[in-house]
Image (cartoon, rainbow, N blue to C red):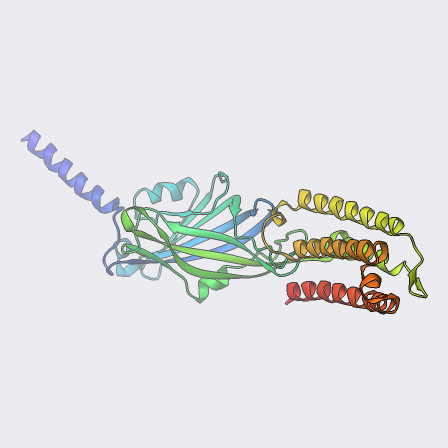
Length: 355
């Protein structure tokens, strides 16, 4: 008789435990389970443009319904159960929790702070605060102008898109914003956009994902002062090598080697500036961007100026082919045509980047 009572007690305990600790998918409202997600940016500490990563502290909020957690009707108006820290971790072992993780973490994150709110009607809200380094897409095509997106991508790992999906509503959009005290040196923070995506999984499966993108606009002043002004100034060097010569009765008065020395000096100056910029902003080395275009314009202008000095001033190919008068008129044409073309091209590069 005692053995029978012990067996019954074990069965009751097992049944009770299965009710209290049910971590399976909540399927009372059908599949896929709808999980609402929001991501708020609490603090931003650094943005590494060369590595396309940023360091930040973010709040991740997930909300879903689990009707198995509903309380009796008499408790319908009671406040939600609030658990933090170890209490939340213990409760998470007894209920279903979306297995959501940040998919674009570039380094191991600091231990997360976790909180839970369980409402009488079965709604659950989990809030997780994490600090870490995140990889983000970085577009240099308008450097140093334009808008960058500081992205945090959240994905469900254990559940496929057929079992659980991520979504958001207006309340999630309101939550997803930079904190009032959030700052990032050299950048102005804008708004956060949410976008639902999917992440490929094993054997052709896909997992729900959501991307939060915090808009950031750079203050271009320091870049203009340190890069753009020297680049535009260096464009004057090859132009001076053309302007400094003068023609009298169809004959050039300045020796070619004196002007070529100016061009060679300008070439070394542009090479040094190019090396300095690429060593500081390694990300600019590859890809099309205004800085590379201006460097290319500098090299082309130096080459054109060298060709004018060698062919026109030194070997006088125009004079030999068409005479002194044509050579003089051709030089007077180049004096304004080349600078106009070069400066118009430089202005176009900058205006396209600003657009």
